[in-house]
Every structure is written in structure tokens, then in C-alpha cells.
Image (tube, rainbow, N blue to C red; front, side):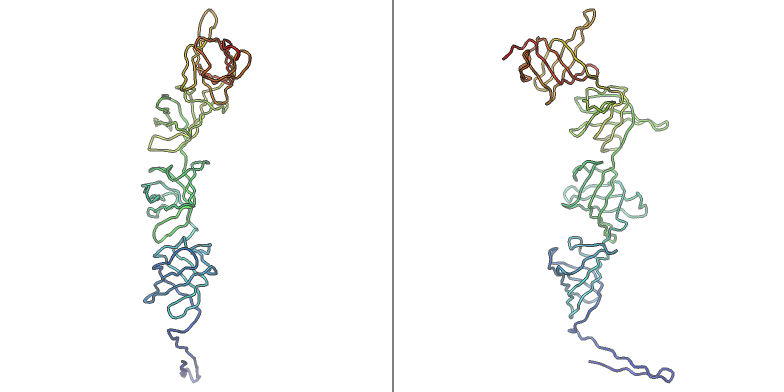
Length: 360
């Protein structure tokens, strides 16, 4: 239906033709509205979008271009009810065959956050983040994770269970600004680093106490040793907890668990130094569980020194004719020669020769 409008303007006739769009008319248009529901995240899919008083059924196919607010590629997996959408396509009544959908509620631009974890929902695998670094004026953000989210602790791969309240983390992902919500692609846990002096060593409890000093302020830290902890000496040789001594200067990197505690990943003991040596002596006791033994070595003027000899999977044990034997073949009272590295009276054996063990 067409209607001709004619009016006089300053003696000149101006004419315009206005097409009255019927409800069933097919035309190209851009519709902006709020996402009410979606049939799923697999294509093809149908989105229900509310625009003013009209509810549209939006058909999305593999040919529909999906983008975020600033034009970055998107997918229906990133869409959520309540998002504001700008839809380009062909409109037939209240149905839109979409050629392009821009989700105005999600973006990657400005979606990197530094902040402190305030609380954790272990069931939903999400957490609340105080984004005070560097976005000081933003409210707390809900950080969501999914099967594609990667967690890193320093340069090591981690998982969601490594996160703890109080940790400082960097989160990179897709930001739903209107809902203060961030779906994380990567979560980087900032490691705590300490330079201090060892004040106590408890290898049974697997803890060290380390005192740090900043200006006039001294802080005592509890450093927990875990299966992931690697301890190295001055020359970066790997050593054990028992090689660490009180008053040694150490550098510690790890994951903070509270204000003055952390789980250590690396410890550099600058006061410890392994030395290569050979010891000849007598086995005085054997610990079959830990595969260690006590070695009594005679020194000058009939003095004796007792060493704790530790074995590893790389330690070779042989009898008098050079045949390889097992740790369980060692006998208290036997005369042995040990070659390896030591710190203090702790020896890590590379080779053990049991001179009294008969040839087999």
C-alpha cells in the first residue's frame, strides 16, 4: 500500500512516498534487543530476543557472523540470557534470519584484571575477584571457569584447586561488563618471593621458618615443603630438606596460603654447597623403609664421624666383585665404600661398594 504526501514549502511542491510496512512484509533491518532465551549453543539455533514490546525469534545458522562488542569473533557459548544484541538480517514479521549478531554485552578489550581472590565457590568453580589492580574504580568481579580455562602457577601448569582466598591473580578472558562477570581463558597465579634467613628446620613436618626484613620490619614466614618443592644448593644442585641449616640465606618462590605462609615451589639455599667425596666406613644401622643407613667413618687420632647415607633410584650398589645387588643385601657391620655428594654429614650416594658382601 502506498500513500502520496504533498505539501507546499515556500511555493515549491515537495513530494514523498512512504511505504506502510505490513506485519508480513519482508525487509532487511537491524534490531537491537535483550536475549531472553536460546535453544542451545550448537548451530543452527534459535534465539528469543525482546526489542521494546516485540519478541523476535532469531534464526542463527553456520553462515551467521557472531562478534563481540568491539568486533572480535564470538560463539553462542559466550552468549547468556540478558545480553544486549544488535542483529542484522532479514525480518519477516517477528522472525529474523540473522546474517550478523553483535553481542554488545561481552568484550575482550580491557578484559585483563589483576586482583585478589575474595572467595571461592569450589562447586561452581568460580571465584570473586577484587580488581583493584589496575582497575580501582570497578566493583568486585565474578570469575567463571570452564573446561577451556588454563591455570598457571608461575611457569607451571596448575588447576582450579591451586587457587586460594587471598592469592593475587591475573585473569584474562571475556568480560560481561554489565554483569561484572569474567569468563576466564587464563588465570595466572602470582608467586610470592622471599629473601630471608632460615630460623628453624623441621623435616618431619616438612616446614621451614624464614625471617625476612624490609626496612625495620621483620616478618616470620612458614614455608611448607610439598611434593612439588625443589630445593637447590648454591651451585643449583638439587638437595634435600635435611641439607638446609639454620642461618642459611634462602630465596623462596611459592604460592601464598595466608598472610605469612606459603607452599614452596623453589628454594635456593645459598648457604648450602654439595661436595663430591669418597667415604670408607662401617654400616652401623639400616633404615629399609627410607633406604638410608648410618656410616661410621674413622678419622685421625681414632676419632669417628657418623654419616647418614641416602640412596636414590640412580644409586648403584655392588658387591666385592662388582656385581650389582639390591639395597636389601646390605648388612649392618659390613665394611663399605660410598661415593657421592654431601652437605654436612648427609651423603647422597652415587655408588656403594659392600666389600664384605660375598660374590654371588
